[in-house]
Amino acid sequence: MTSVYNTLLERGYIKQLTHETEIKEALEKEKITFYIGFDPTADSLHVGHFIALMFMSHMQKAGHRPIALIGGGTAMIGDPSGKTDMRKMLTKEDIEHNVSSIKKQMAKFIDFSEDKAILVNNADWLLNLNYVEFLREVGVHFSVNRMLTAECFKQRLEKGLSFLEFNYMLMQGYDFLELNRRYGCIAQLGGDDQWSNMLAGVDLIRRKEQKPAYAMTCTLLTNSEGKKMGKTEKGALWLDPERTTPYEFYQYWRNVNDADVEKCLSLITFVPMEEVKRLSALEGAEINEAKKVLAFEVTKLVHGEAEALRAKEAAEALFGAGNDMSNVPTVVITKEDLNKTLLDILVETKIIPSKGEGKRLIQQNGLALNDVKVTELSRSLKEEDFKDGIALIKRGKKSYHKIELQ
Image (cartoon, rainbow, N blue to C red; front, side, top):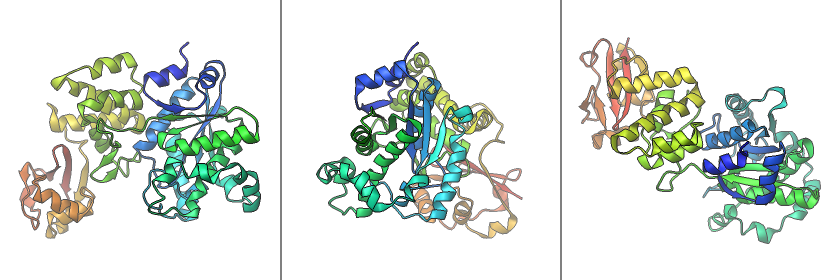
């Protein structure tokens, strides 16, 4: 039977790892317990988290036990990794709300039944720590000189790094130690931007417990230009359908660059690699078939097959031979709203995130009403704009919404 290590390697997940020979042997011969951490900085996971969930899912399918660690405690501090400024401080109430929402999302991807996976919150041990005891047990094993060479700190030293954030590495290392003691967890997985923090945990366990511990990072989801994927005009591409609709989610993947198709199919779908190679080798207009498979498979994983089918049908109604517009994202207004400008209506119904964004779209000829470019900021909606009670808004090249008049 193929080791999950080979599967992860073939699909392009593995970026960096400690103790390569030991990890390969452990994954081949044992059923290990590993963890991935998720800080609850919002009440939904986004596409950046999704690749970690896929990483976790591949491991679980191979018989290994995941621990999904929600950072209710570390979110009180904030991870400086990849940030040029200090993160916004969250209240305990904000964090508790976010933790609750994220737990529900995770259960769609990971099987938590019969102890096949564990869901924990590091607030359970971090918030009641005695600081002096923590420094004596954990802090003594961390070299400040070495910490300052870590990538997550280096880029912050010029602008300023608070002592609050400087503690984050110690806390993440302590999480790994705690999970090792409680559940026999021997490996931490995560995004490559967490490498420095993950090394700290591995080193701490090996020093204090004299036991094996490992870290393995997955590649970040970036496009062919090296930029992080998952950014839209409205911000992050969320997994919560209230924040990013299944149709918008589908359309994002339907419109990725040709050069990114193979990477996306490999990392965020379970399409067999033989089929991934075949689809990504398509050229010219035929590559659109691969993008349709990508969009459908990712949307199915996140939102379920029924929503994926609806999104697919809506896209085909707008861009293909279909004519069923029932699944195109729809907002409803009343006749009283006709007193407002079209721009105000689009912002209020969240079709456009802000007035500034709307003005920019109009000035750049990026907004159309019923396939006619909107050129005036003061343009209003009139009853004659609605055919059978429906007006069609096109934002950019391929983003459509229906406005229904009641």
